[in-house]
Length: 128
Image 1 (cartoon, rainbow, N blue to C red):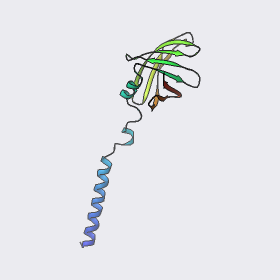
Image 2: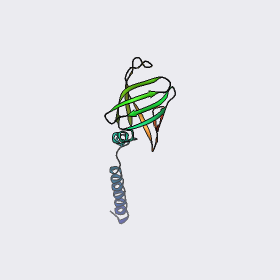
Image 3: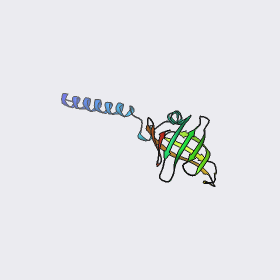
């Protein structure tokens, strides 16, 4: 084998090695965390009241640290609920109330944002 062929093989080997090492530095896209973590969401909401506004209603929700909530829907009344956080999602269920006869079963929606403003599904949350 001549010097030129040896140099080409060496360069190809080094190039493939660099690519292989580069691939190991990154997790596959489907394994990378998306949005806020469960701990982030809990820290953001827990023990605070949040004013929210969606396409059909608005109001204020107090997210207690024990996973319960008190919800006031503007012009309609109040109800209680439960909440939990999953990676990137806020999960909520609501008890029956005069304006919500059947309540609402557990529903999880993506949450994103920062500071005092967050988007949860189609609703905008601001710190009350």
